[in-house]
Length: 224
View 1 (cartoon, rainbow, N blue to C red):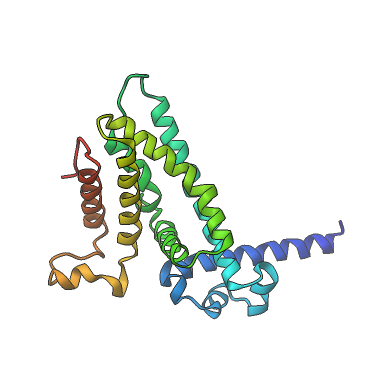
View 2: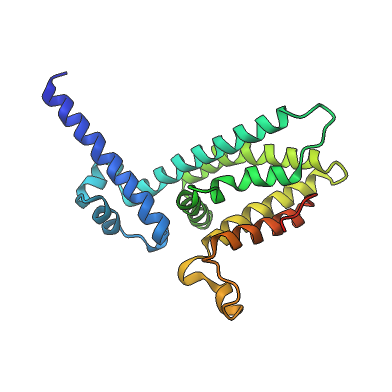
């Protein structure tokens, strides 16, 4: 490959990365429904044709963002859960609290807030308007992870039927993504509480969400 070809290839790679990074920022900030193609191209400082060239369409770009962050987040959750379960003795019950924390970490951990919000918004969007690709993403990256969490939760509470744990997992995952999406103008809790509770207070939000999940799943150590 010539030096000129290498330079062109590097430029193409940089442009594609810039578009992808810009899409993540704008989608996290505005949500899929509030993001236009020009919002993304303006953020990336490229023309509309560049998105078509590298990704095909705005929808395809959104789907690629969803696939990549879903793959990374669920790989991390699966790895952390397996490591925790493997650290226990064969007859030792796992901690429900620990399982919950592993589940919510990609959404709430320090430094993960932007990608966590983005993942939540994309999950909600693609549940309401699924495509063939996003259904495949769900089946490939979410379903196997969900089954592992249900199994771990059932082991933590052996007196609870596993069928019940599927419901509890479903309610946990839905509560997390919907709560995360209630930001900005959707800060309804501030209105109905007369300003006493503010979703923008990230630390208060984290503690309240954890308390809710812990009590709902029967944690032995609810958040104070």
